[in-house]
Figure: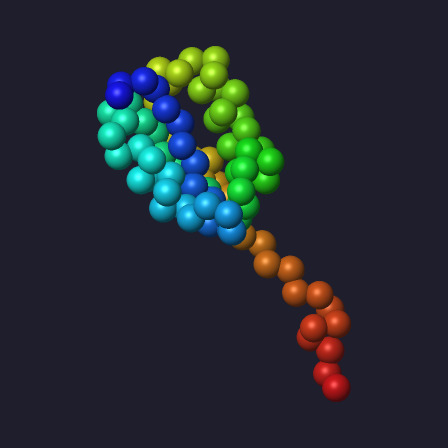
Length: 87
């Protein structure tokens, strides 16, 4: 199909493997696929730039996106102070 499609895979998705985002788009000639770090199932709820991409896609399904959203996301691990405490 050549219907414009926007597909997201999320690295922390425990319900759907991230690889399925690409697999779902294999036969879609007009698909755009993005892998989103630090997002669970439903990346639009976890990363604001993903939600912005979704809105922009609905506004203009022919728009071509770059990977700047995914590249802008940095995983910020938080180690609580009690985890570093000496015995």
